[in-house]
View (cartoon, rainbow, N blue to C red):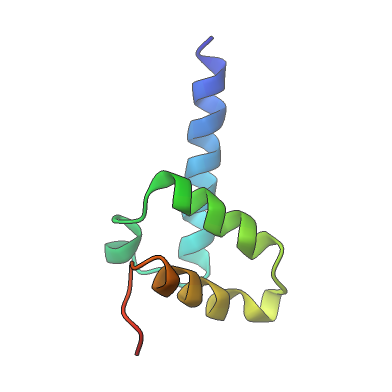
Length: 69
């Protein structure tokens, strides 16, 4: 029964690593919900490599985690 939790934890940790890799500031990432982290990471996986940082900034803005420049 605990295996499901471990998989979920692993997915959440991987999602956080992906978001950090593409420029999410730790101070902001700490406020991002686990659900959004996973959603954002999945979106980035479907985004071309050259567009991932820009797309992440857009996602953070759209969901109210950062303000527009």
